[in-house]
Image (tube, rainbow, N blue to C red; front, side):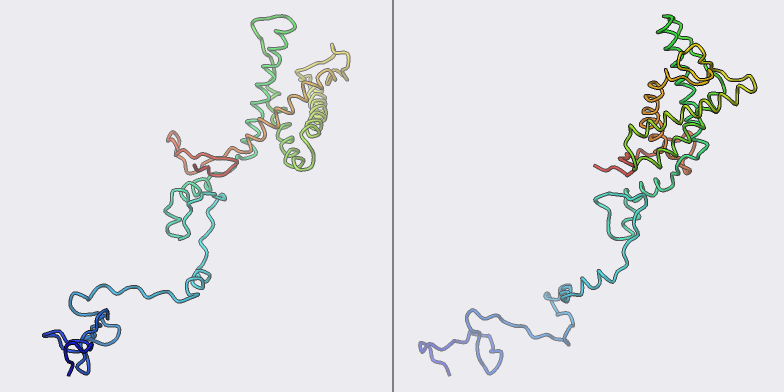
Length: 267
């Protein structure tokens, strides 16, 4: 029986000891006995939501490695906030834009030929109008050409497009444009010679000093070379970037998609 003043712990009135009749020690924590089996929730006010079990070491990494990787978004989408979860990625705006871009198809060969033909036709009209102004100072700018120019320019530039795709990684632009210029002379002479057999050739260079059979002339070497640079850098490269959106409705504006080098551009 403890006596007061002898330094032994003292029982508080009305509080029973937790075992062996011992009282509560100062600074110790009072443990409450569970009323149910191990793992069952506590009764009373202490019955809170069970805390999640701590993850075992290595379990998260193993689950991450075992989980199937989400499918890569189409068109090499480079969105920095692309979610890892497949369902989230399907619902993300970036995935939607990439999916829309995946539905776009490159222009067909005939569509590209059509654009090249109009470009050549337009350039010839503008060149002859400028020539008439420089030589005769004619403010009317009468540009002339022929319907044959549509077929000649369209087919020629479509062939130059194949040359560009083959030579762009093999030689520099100056050498490529020199090859285009040589091809232009070959094509101009060939088509002019064929049309002359039917008295249908729309040009004649007989008044130039360095002409050959009136079908080609060296005086046009520099203009053809400059035209080759414009043709590759502005016409062919940009035409190859154009896309058809098969899902778009005629007359209905499509959502704005900003592209950079063929990729969806994000801020």
